[in-house]
Image (cartoon, rainbow, N blue to C red; front, side, top):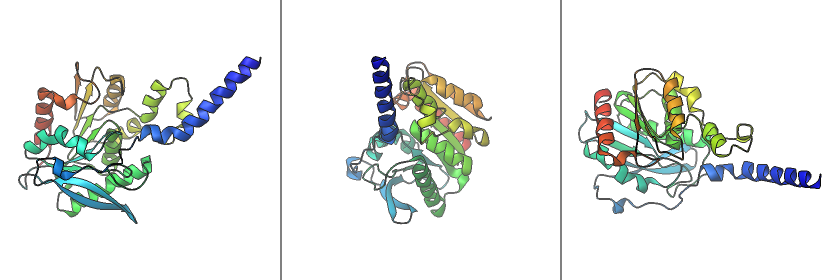
Length: 266
């Protein structure tokens, strides 16, 4: 019986460690501040918001080429920083769209510690900034990547945009964590469940969902599950060759994203 109690004790230690470390695993924040000068976009500039008193966050903004063009409000995934996403989103800038790359608390040199409540407040603050700059809601397209899709769904459920683009979305972070850590009672322990599937039914704007069939980080079944729960109008692209981070490396995917945005915003 000693071996049983030893295994049980070790399992309890693992539970405690995982519970305490879960936000470090979910938000492996890139704290280094990226440089605007690394990118050949003269109109790309830093802007600031204050989602709560004393917390000032830096984001990057590139204006649209004309007042009729939409603005993409972009929320990146849980790894990396603003600078990592400029090349990825460059085709949308080249299409004439505006782009606001959101810098979360704890990421990209910003102060603060990430959490679900915190990132949702950060999202509201950049949306407020766009509205204050004169961009109406029917010109704002919310675009999320991975964890950023959960931020996007939460914001869109409160503040309907012109359209919503979700790239490699989890149905919930709890679903994905339970799949990866099947041997732990994840749903009882998780502090930031990011329940997109519980929120998607309150969103009625045009949706374009993208997911790679070879995604091993957020398996495609979770994207399919979220898409099934979403309201019309909606469309999906499940790419047979794409993995988790390379969907926009495919020209045909970019062309469909641009066409979707042109058809539904601006």
